[in-house]
Image 1 (spheres, rainbow, N blue to C red):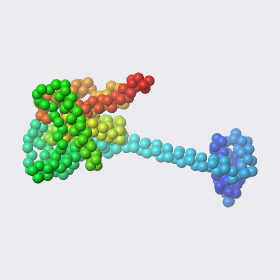
Image 2 (image 1 turned 120 degrees about the vertical axis):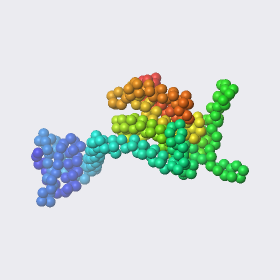
Image 3 (image 1 turned 60 degrees about the horizontal axis):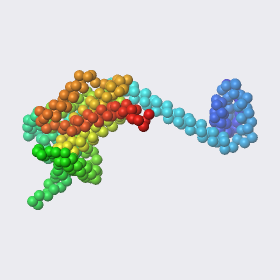
Image 4 (image 1 turned 90 degrees about the vertical axis):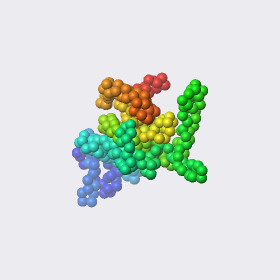
Length: 349
């Protein structure tokens, strides 16, 4: 390290040092007895630095030196920002590998906690009856919270001079005389009714409703089964893919599966099953298309899920949100395989 020059102005020392840096000459300056000594770190750069010094001394206030100082300050600020960002990422990574649930998979456990909380708050424990899925939950007709969590915003109806809250009817298929035209007309009417219901919901500002039915569970076995699968699927996905990505995935699965169930059977349903089947489909496809991520499902688990999906459709387990199950499963598969699908599209080659 060799002394280049001594300057009386700190501003000039800073600007010359910055200008040298823009010319790939490493330099620095120190204050000594009210003067500023400029150093060149590499002796090989000295001759070039002296030439620059000569030009600088002829016009130290030229715009190019001030511009160099701004540029170097920007570079240092950006380097400092990137370093802080890297430190934060490293800190988060250390915490995730530390094993604390709050840093590893907070969203999974918070979702489980919300489901349990809703069941506790929205159940009339003085009037619990047995149903197909064990003791019935979320059965309190006076629960304001339960009314806010449904997929559709209720509207005011009037009958015989009495006003009450209800839902516009979603048309259903007739039990007899089904043909192509009947099916087509019912599907069109279902689409109109579902769109109208969603429009009312969005206009009311209650944009959470397509998501929140996932927190409503109507039986003890219902919530136990769903929470078991949510924990099993959610912990692995959230840990590997990260909490923000996991939350977005769950929101997409919840909205699509709940809207599908609204279209198929109306607003009287609830449960995490659509999300659960979506997570199963997602993990299955990630294991097939991106095994390097480290998440996947054994083949026998996939077969079991298919059998369970079909069993629910038979009606043997009572009224089940089959549309939510099926659509959630398909959407999860598509999201899990989206990168492979995208690469195979003809216009992406």
